[in-house]
Length: 139
Length: 139
DNA sequence: AAAAAAGATTTGATTGTCAAACTAATTTAT
DNA sequence: ATAAATTAGTTTGACAATCAAATCTTTTTT
Image (cartoon, rainbow over the protein chains, first blue to last red):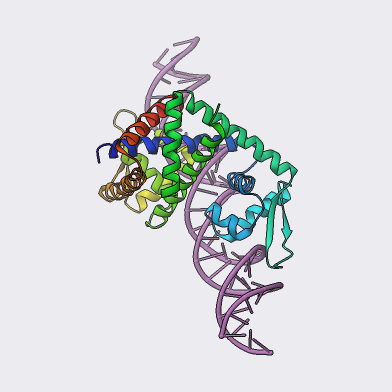
């Protein structure tokens, strides 16, 4: 394939750029990285049990227990016990957690805006199109 | 902006997809995450001193000292002292380190290929173009 | 009812990280 | 030229992040 090496290179730059942007945003908040990630997942997908949360975070449930403990202690989230299955804990963001999520999401919107500012309208549509296809098929 | 929310969403999916792919590839090797990251940087940019390596990894030099210690112990990299400045350590990949880098890079190429397989030639060129612009201006 | 499975937590260990103190070498300013 | 400041890197001490395996409780299956 013609552009394979070049594309790989640009993709790596892109991902690394995003990663370091993300950690610097998190580090400027009073949240730890693991806590911020959990809040992001909960904010995006809403209430869910420990197992799903662990899966979406890509870590074990043991790790997630610790993270949620800390989020509860800091009042960003709380456990609700499920009425259907008494083994299950549903994790839900508190007011404070929602607010933190919204704030973080604003940063994401700003970064997106900044990235898109160097593209024309047509280029933006093309990029969106490409990302949708790749996300649907690859991830 | 018209597509801001949608684009942000797709970008987050894209980054998360890449992140979990990356960690699963690393976890299937005998390298730890921090070690793999260091090898990636050294493989891509070649010999460099501790400070630059720390910078590219986005961590402190103290953290990098520990990482390089482990890479040396496992024979993936070694420190060379600079002839110009005796404070400086230049970190360089060993044969084994180079091989590990090549192997990891192959995985990246494969992922890129898989992602691009859903796009037409024109779309690939457009995507490459957009990424180049964004990387140059934003990151 | 007994056995197996599932959701979550706990435990013990390793890995990843930082800030601050420190060592050694180089540069700058007097 | 020599004292002061700076720079590269390491060490230390403390948390934060994570996993695998053992455990507890509650379903589900047999």
